[in-house]
Amino acid sequence: MNEQEILKKISFNVLQGRFRSEDDGIDEGLEGRPGVEDLIKKGIAEGVSPKKIVVNALTPAMDSVGKKFESGEYLIPDMLASAECVGGAMEILKPFLIKDGVESKGKFLIATVAGDLHDIGKNIVSIILKGEGYELIDLGTDVPTDKIVAAAKEHQVQFLGLSALLTTTMRSMDEVIRKLTETGIRDHVKVLIGGAPTSHEFADKIGADVYCSDAFKAVEYLKLVRSA
Amino acid sequence: MIIVGENINGTIPEVKNIIMVRDREGLLQLAKRQVAAGSTFIDVNVGTGIGSRQDELAAMQWSIDAIQKEMEIPICIDSADPLIIEKGLEIRKGGRSLINSVKADDVNLWKIVRLAIQYDARLVGLAMNETGIPETESERLEACRKIAGVCEEIGFPMEKVYFDPLVMPVSADSVQGLVTLKTISAIKREFPDANTIMGLSNISYGLPGRSRVNAAFLHMAVYAGLAAAILNPLDQEVMSAVKTACALTGQDRHFRRYLRSFRTPAKEKSEQ
Image (cartoon, rainbow over all chains, first blue to last red; front, side):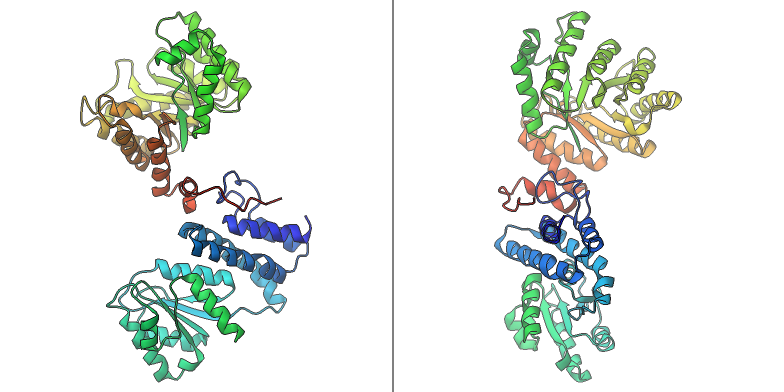
């Protein structure tokens, strides 16, 4: 296999959502063929640059997954399977990328706010962003405001994602942003919010940087911010 | 999960005719359609109820030979007669086979377990003894213990045993569904390495809306630990139930098989 073939196969298997060789894909009958894990290891062994794998295989494949999700062709399990592939790939590539001096795209702190135990949406965002190459710090659910602000400060994160699924708990987002301001770090952190009851209007009202209706909206926004 | 297509059965009038006149095309159609519908095993039961043992031996030989020449599909050799089972295994020449079945009796149990070892086949063990089908789960489990005991004694691994808890029509006795389910759970508890299998459609005998009852029962049985089912794979409601049951019990990672049935053919098939 030459470099192009390996990159193409990695991309194909991310779209199929196959990390291990025994994994079932979107299409039938792929079990037993090498998945993303084996292909990445093979690529590295054959001297394909880890950066090329990220830029020319993983990123375009995940972009494509995002589009398919938006169009309704891919559903939540499909998206998660692909994101898992990219997350797993990044784990393997991490030491090589560090050695090559390729930096992470930034630190992203994520939490479901106080009083709220919903974690599915937050976890999806977490997996997708990890796959995109961000360094994720996940504080979990029902996280007190002070803890979120303290973690943002301690880890000097560039991005903060807040999730709330209840009309009663979304107000905590407001509190987090006020505390960030009081602590003097509001200007260093982009705040992304999401969850069923939230909206663009609500984001504007509490002074968040952006409202994201799904994980790929967050990816889009982050791309925009980084290119600015 | 393992799906054993049940449609090649000599007690069904059209099938009986196919077997009697040796209608090769007819037989292969029955097999092909079941494979296309998702069967992972094809059951072959050539007992027409009218022929001699010699007729049945010849019919088993003819059926298996015809099917295995045409396609590569594991075969479930369906007979209680060790001689017919052996004939089937012989014709299979080491192809993957499931013997259906043996019960906890003193006449054939040893013989059939030995055949399973000799021909490296898997084996269905019915939760019944020579006096018939016990009414309670504890008596059915007792029958399984007897079969397991013989398997252990002559070195047949539990991984290749498929215990059948037995399915009786709920139309005749409304607690029978529950007895079957409890038997599955009890078998899984006592013999965690063994598998379970059942003939699904008997549950709904005598009732209207049979597919619905079969599908509902399948869900419950899969939750209780059922690993294989003998059923009519052409029944779409039941085959859908196989998918939902596996998906809902964590046996279909990322809902791959479930979702596939809703997709239009995918475009990205360009892997070289």
